[in-house]
Length: 273
Ligand code: HPA
Image 1 (tube, rainbow, N blue to C red):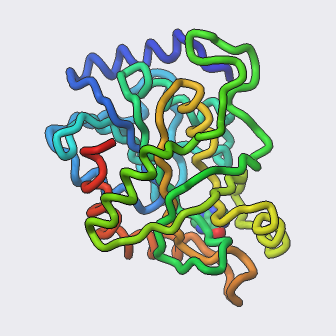
Image 2: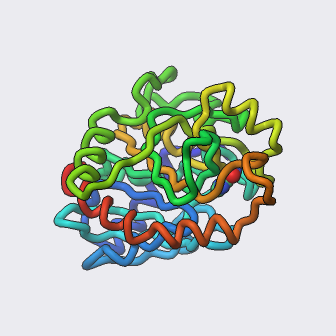
């Protein structure tokens, strides 16, 4: 279903009725990383179900709430739980909240996800700054008529992930004696994990990590003129690298294991976003 200005405005009007804070930073949290929600103060919590035209998140380990409040003196809006195309939503629907964030006043966005490590130098538990992505979902959230009020027909993607924000994140990490991995995120439709042959193909194509989210949100954010910082939590090595099957429990366990580190870093760079 096409996203229209009316849908965006109705969702925004409802949210503005619930809270007076105009957020400047958006946060979209992937599997197991919802813990960031604990850091928000003075928050207003709005269930997705209550927001006009918001889809409903269905996957285990994700929750469906929008939180608006403060982190380290910055006004933030946080999606606790996101929408995936494998749930059956179109790419424009998965990225609808980004449109809403833009209209609320957001100009920079942190997107996080759980991802499989394709780069064999990675280890589960690593945090990877996304330097670029491969949209391999076969879909694009910007197809159909372009609304020029939302963005240009042919948006530039040469710096999809903001070099400025990457520098900010690296600097904050260095101050905590931490080093991010960096690399290219391949976004696939899912929901099955990849085959070993697909992982070999992805590595040859330049991917360092693979997951089932993020690319639609980033494309819409760039269309809307929002700066994007992306971080993947490498929760497992991708299929075929180790002689063991992949499962969602492992993904959640690893995300849980790195959460303290993750929180510390996010707290360090949010003030500079
Ligand atoms: N593949 C795709 N998505 C994922 C993976 C993976 O190995 N791990 C966490 N999300």
